Length: 426
RNA sequence: GUGGCCGUAGCUCAGCUUGGUUAGAGCGCCUGGCUGUGGCCCAGGAGGUCGGGGGUUCAAGUCCCCUCGGUCACCCCA
Image (cartoon, rainbow, N blue to C red; front, side):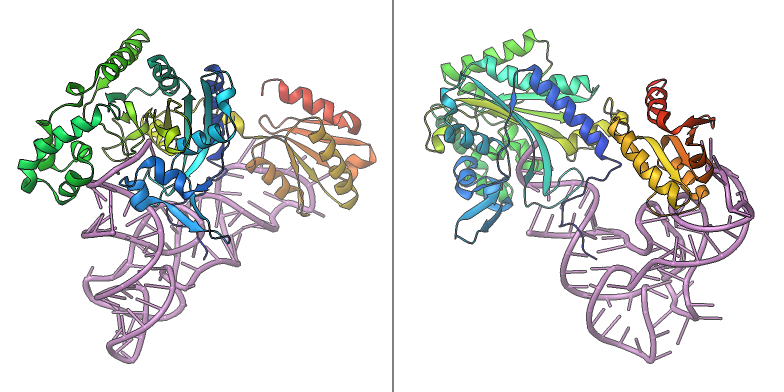
């Protein structure tokens, strides 16, 4: 049997209302903060990600869905949202819009890594970016959006972790210091970290190998190496979070997987996901990204939030997405007995829908009993019954499926009757 | 990319250890009891290449190998 590709899943009708409700809430929050939606393509030129994420990043090294199109171009299914958004900003001259520009997206991302619960080869992210502002207030504004959203959903066991990864001016000195620190321990590091020592010593900091972790604990801290500008920026970000009373912890060990990050780096973790896929959100500032795409210097900051993971965390904390239930449901089922009645029912069904009610009718010709059972199973609030008897008197039976009360209603009044009845006590 | 566990109807699972008649159950689905009225009950029915391929054997859902998929722990990430 044909199956969906590995690590890629269907979202079925039973779950869709939950997704719709969550997405609606995200759009509502984005609008509240003045963010406008941008829809960028799922594929970009491979270079867009190669140049921004960094050649040594895991994404570029082993996780990209890359293919050659018929014209010989190398294209890649986007592994993350930011690079494409910045590309679009540059391509469409958004630098001439009032700055900063605030953008958000809800879109699928693709990463070719090994699937696990909460980690999929195709997953959805809610993300937002502020482009054109280097101010610490921009960092805190864009990051407070998902944090407030998470609070609104009622999640309690989440932690905001904050760090600064410096910038191209001060980071090289720190990387050197790290290299110098780790070199004597070289033989005690794990295989991966020995490699990291060469290509990207920052990564050793987040290694979970106990041996490496222990050595890393004594490593110099980035905060000791930040230059005045970066330090001032970081201090102000922390001050502003404090002003908003957003609880956070400083974590000198988060460095983020993508090379384009500068200064602010943030992650949000849940304590409820068994240590596995507990990271729900990642983000930070990326002041050099636009230049890497051959654009001018456009500072930016943003985040990406994994929707599947958020859903998982909600579940783990026993929470529901507000209003998710109401996105589903059926008002009316129209049952017909006999061919003449079926035609009249078909017309009636159309009128009911035109009036704005959610209705389905019988499309085969089963017995009334089977049709009533359908109405019940589909969760219809009312059943309308049309047969020879009703037709003769130009009437229809309207049955309230909750109470079992049935009324005889003139045919031309059925739609009105249903409309008022379904708004009362729905 | 590395290692462990798992894979039998739409769903949840039994059967596998000690190979041997037509592979079962509950729920769901369809039909009937009730010739035009849902929920409860009763009866019947449909639905399975036992994830796929190869091997061992007189005989494989059951044993072995490979492969695909899921899951967990890593790597890393949302």
